[in-house]
Image (cartoon, rainbow, N blue to C red; front, side, top):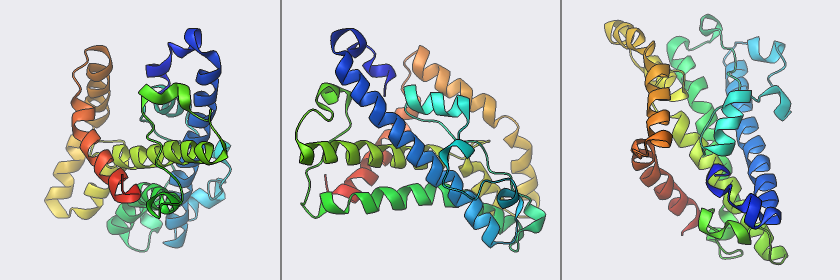
Length: 233
């Protein structure tokens, strides 16, 4: 998001600063909720590893991954510091691991839908977080400012949830799929997981350096559909 608005640094620095502050705030909130939920569910299922390492907290510093945070900040998708999980300690085994993995994205969706309640109820307007209106972010009155804040926070949470549910390692979607499979299917899938990071980086690079649009052509309609379901817009 910020990468697409870099021109504002020269044409309208104040607008860029407002947008940067809001995106960073949304990023911190989304990642913190995401990783805390992984730790919470793992702890509830019997694995205290995350709690012992200080990850069962809403302190964002504990959950930030430098490279993932930069990616989400400038590119629009990224990740937090992975929560360590010992599957052998989970009461549900592989299914428990899938539940832990799904907890992060689901928590982001819950936050997005809850924050969208006043918008869907008509108490606030919908402020779409598009680059075309970046110069207007938090430049109006109190009501408009709240709408701008909610718009980007909702968008970031939905985007983080959808991105992390892609079934490619090391994303949560891969762990969910692995936990739901059994026997030789799980073994076969595990062998392919090693290629996940390479494929993921390849898709990101092709999108941003060769403008293939592969990622957004898949993620965009899902993000838009969930945003409409949450806000009514």
